[in-house]
Length: 280
Image 1 (cartoon, helix red, strand yellow):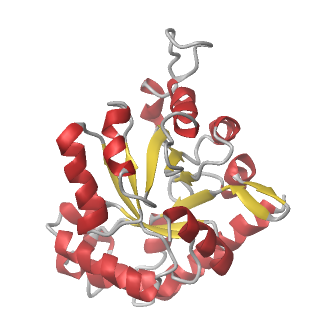
Image 2 (image 1 turned 180 degrees about the horizontal axis):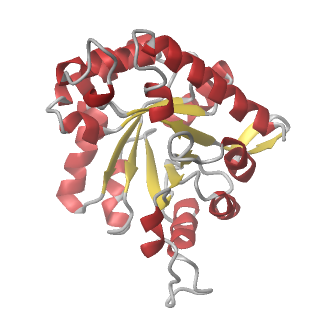
Image 3 (image 1 turned 90 degrees about the vertical axis):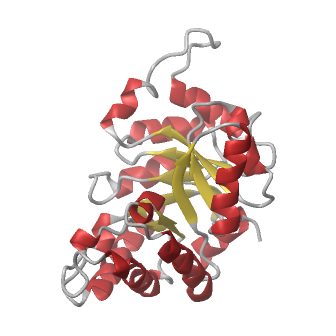
């Protein structure tokens, strides 16, 4: 199955647009695990098991593993997700961006070492920095477009004087991803939930691409506004998929022994809010 097939299947089976981001911070772990980086796998595996039937995707952020020398735990976690939730796609949040043979190595890391179904990329260095990932048939690649951080304005919101119509940088990226760069239908875009107007603009420019939307929950993005801006469907079938990510709000819903149960309750609540927003 391709990444898009898995995405559509998980959306239907789990009635979900929610992606749970796996950003393990040992300093925020519950008592008994707190401060112990060797328990990263245990913590994340418990979250996965508690939420596997509630999500459209999981999104491990590689920096949270690498910072604690826990890449081996990430490999175990990827295998565990395959076993526990084989129908749920896994997006490796790596934000890689390099050219030539280096990009090829990063693609091997994402798709062969970790077995991810999709990866996040920076498009700043141009199409040849994206192309190596597209050689992996059926895998997905999400390009940073209009990110949720305030500093995104520094570049993404600036006009391109040399391009017809002088689009903003993020608008140009959206057009490239919908058009000439999307050789095999593998591309998606990252657009922050903190900018619903920009989500709607990106959706207008890229009507069929999957949108990975971080920023709901701890970052303050509005879940309902996000869905109304980015989700599109015809006759009950999704035409413009959205993957709404929540990390900290789910992972750290409780600091007690009930952390996994609390994560499930928060994931279920968010899943239902997103699902209800589709009808609005």
